[in-house]
Each structure stands twice: as C-alpha cells, then as structure tokens.
Length: 442
Ligand code: TRP
Image (cartoon, rainbow, N blue to C red):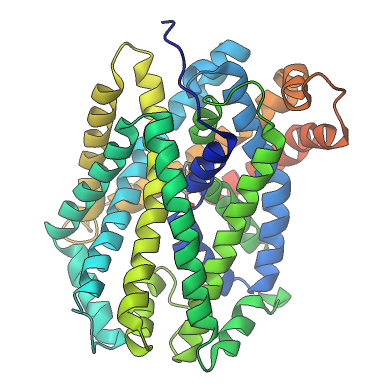
C-alpha cells in the first residue's frame, strides 16, 4: 500500500501528543504513593536517575525506530532489521488491548468521580464512609461499565480524527489545561495551614526506606510512565518527518512526564497532611483519602472536581496512544481508520468488562492467583513491556547501530551523547531490564 503517511503538523504537536501519552494515571495516581511508600525524595532521586538514563535511551530508541521506518510497530522491525524482532510489535498489540482494558475501567471511575464531586454528593462524608462508597461503586456490575464505555468512546472519537486533526489537536488543547489545573491544585495544597509536613514527607530523603525492590519498582514505574516497551511511542515517532530533532524531543517528553509526576506529589501530600489523613493508603489514596481531603478544604467542591478532570484528561491522552498503535497496524491490512478504530475500541471495551467485574461479583475468579484486572495489569506491565523494552534496546544497541547513529546525528559525526546512548542501550538497559523482569515474575 502506498498511501502517503500522515504526519504531525508541528514538532510542538508531536511533543504534546507524546507527553500526553506519557503523562497518565501512572503519574498522578501511582507515582505519588510509590514515592511516599519508598522513602520520598530518596525514591525520587533514584527515579530521576533511571528516567534520564535508561528511560530516556529507550524512549529515543522507540522514536528513532518509528521515524526511520515510517511504519507501525510490527512492520518497523521488519523494515529495519531481522524480521524476528517484529515480535515486539505483535506483543505490543496484545499489551495495548490489555492495558486499554484495565486503564479504561479506572479512567471510567475518574469520570464518575467528576460527576459525583460536581454534584456535591460527597459533601459531609468522612474517609470511612467515602471508602464504603468507593467500594460499593466499583463493585457494582453496571455503573462502572457504563463509565468505562463513555471513556472508550471518547478515546475512539479522538483517534477517529487521525494524527494532526485528532491526536495532535487533543494534545495541544488538553495538555496545557492539564498543566493549569495541576498548578492550581499545587498552589491550593501548599498554601493550606500544615502543608509543610506533607512537603517534608514527600521531599525529605529517607534512604533507610530505599531497598533493592524499591529500585526495581522505580525502574518499572519509569518504563510504564514513559509508555515504553510496546510500540506506542514508536508509532507516534513514525508520524515524524526526516528533519525533526528527535534527541531534543525525547528529552523534552521525559522532562514533562517527570515534572507532572513530581507536581502531582506536591498537589497531593501537602493537602493530605494538612488534614491529618493517612498518606500511606496506597491505591486508595486517590479515590478515598483525597475526596475526604477535598471535602475538608475551603473550595473543596471546585478543587475536587478539577482534580478528577485532571485525572480524566491525563488518562485520555494516554489511552489514545494505546489505541493508535492498533489502528496503525491493522490499517496496513487494508481496513480503514474508522473501521479499525471502532472495532479495536469495542474489543478493548469488552475486555474491560471482566476487569470491572473483578472488583465485584467476579472477584473470586482467579487465574494464576490473580483476578482478571490484576492479570491484565501483570501480563502487560510486568511481562510484555519489559520484554519489549529489552528487545528494543538490543535491536538498536546491537543490530541496527550504524543506522541508529545516523538517524540521531543527521549528516554530522555522532557526538558523545549519541555514543553514550548506544552504550546504555547495549549494556546498561538490557541488564537493568532483565533484572526488573526477573524481579517482577517472582
Ligand atoms: N504512560 C501512561 C501512564 O503513565 C500509561 C501508558 C500509556 C502506557 N500508553 C502506554 C504505558 C504504553 C505503557 C505503554 O499512565
């Protein structure tokens, strides 16, 4: 097929869309509580070090493969090197469906919470009753699935618009809104009386809490947060033209992603401490502790609503990047964008139903000791993404190295940074990723 490949309208558009992919539930919901659990600033320091070495290198590798091949994640590997590496693309297709399934369920909860907050139905409830309300909501067999459907429909709607008019436009509109909301929440949180204790909890390094497994967790989180290992970033890179400076773009995306994660912590912990709530609530922090915090603060109805709008936006720009690789691949099989987008969205929605039901009636149904929701998360995040990242590092670091160097350096001689990039992909990334993989399977 020789249809002309669609391209981003501008480099800024690519940055916004790619940062939109990276910035997601992982940054706002997961990163803060992981940092809180693992020694605060000590964890943040390790996380930063991993993001800007291994994470950034694999990110650039994916953008480079996409840009060089101008192809979807399966055909990119076939085009540039030995076709066996296209297994990365096929695994990526599976991972995209799996991540979309559970991600859309949680994103559906965030939409439901916008409605619940804005309508004032949480007013006057304490943390215990909010916990009960959350449990009752997610275990309901109907409501969360309706919200999941709404979220998938929103994702499909954006992807139907194509690259420049759909994904790029969504990124350029939504990412600035996301930043503004986040800044407003940070300002609100740090100006509450008693906020200092929260800042200290999040930012004072406690190296005694940092263990081998927290380093592993930091690397796994860096990977998931940068959307690596399944061809999402690769697919976005494939819509870049030859003249784009991809090294600079990769750096900017990693910087934006990390900034949002840290700002999310600064929006959450000062507020949690100001009202003497439990910062260690783990995954329940977002849907139970924070609503109680918002309830207690001046202007809480507005800030609480904004917080869940923030989460929904973050989730939407990420889920778009999970659907687009499917569209890019299946379009090469002769289907139209509209056909593939709607069919893939519908399949992902169906796969989300057992994820949602796992929170209630189907919770006892277990495979490998995990309910369906946890199974989808585990297979994608702990298995496919690290294997994909490992193979991408090997592919660029060992197999197509001359081409890779030429792609990042243009006509000039490869500089020191380019050589460092290859060194990391050759040795450091594969070893570190193999370690997360083995650790994650235990
Ligand atoms: N990065 C997103 C987050 O932090 C999740 C995500 C979107 C993702 N697309 C991905 C993760 C592709 C891995 C691969 O929430």
